[in-house]
Length: 272
Image 1: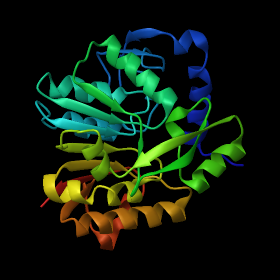
Image 2: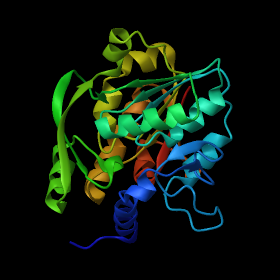
Image 3: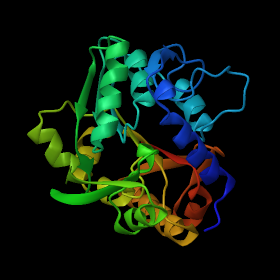
């Protein structure tokens, strides 16, 4: 299997992050969304002048320019909690961060990082989002929990790569989870759900109609064709919900007619 440069880099970094000395290291992050905050594990201790190790620089810069004080933010797909820390710091004591993360290993790391910073405004909901309540098989590379997915084709690819960790997760529609867990309605939703974007959005129709949160959605898909299909579905759905869309990386306005332009990167969605 031929790997692109980004996939190869992620695999190398993933293996490095499993080295106990690195995984247990607690430090103040020097770059990334958690810059200036304490975190455990990862490469955030490297000097900030070195080339960045992740692909969310544009999203990070875009989000940093927005006003957050006092908002309720949903971090859907929290991974290690780096954006969770960013949001918790920015919304302040009057705000609230709801982390929705189905991976048990990731939930533990999020809890550790939140505790290190003594944030009291973060709640963790250990479920995935979909269009209905069910249980799904979840697979992730043992060295890269962030790549975990419950999309069957993606999970099969992860298992094919070898050294995969499998578990069963609960998924729910956000509309129903808000009622079940008595969650405050969101002002902003950040989504990074590894291919589950469209079913997750379908499960929050009522939330989008009644509360009109803004969203940042990372587009995923197994291969170019699936990414194209995914971004077209997402854009059409958000237009149906009466939202305006921009591609964060290029600042281009996105509509159904040019949805393919946003197949890589992040969509920013704002209610009309």
